[in-house]
Image: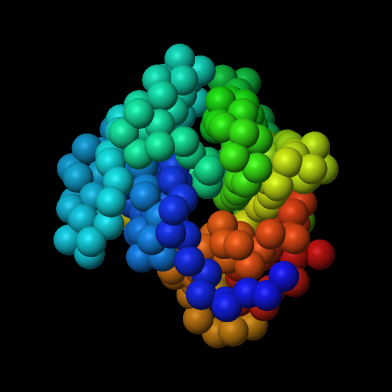
Length: 255
């Protein structure tokens, strides 16, 4: 194949969950700039979702905003149906919705918190993929882009539920890559380092300082760094890349 390397997403429909702010916001806006129709999903922060969508439309983007709990099966079915009805079949999926992620010693966690991590990082991508993949198969083209984390490779302490769920997410991505490759569907995972977003406003400064010293590139990552990786995975140029983990962390080796 000969590519012109435009990384165009024209003619595609993307769903990015948890896209009112942070990494999801940057990814959804980047997809729009590349020509995709984009469904912006949020659960709680309607004001941020509307502000993000307004920015998207001012730039000429075509899409919609939709409120739904991305960890609930019924809500996912409704969301996918509404996006299909308004924008067309979804062929780019980015499960990005996430809850709070406090670091605690093992003894201070309870199973309900552990279950919440599994719901967002294993259950949600599974249910979303299950709802959307039939349409991708029919089209013979699709992209599943999970947002993982470097923590699974780095074995971060005091973070067992989150790290465990991210490990499950990675395994699911790799399995789907093998299963769906014959249908022209890729499944990849982006593993960011610590990229400060609104979620990290109240993180301890000493922890930020400690982590910053481990970044060989000598700067903090920004959401657009992750968005650029997502655009690549979503593009035609990445059609022969599947089952891969792309670390976006300024050169810090995760192994």
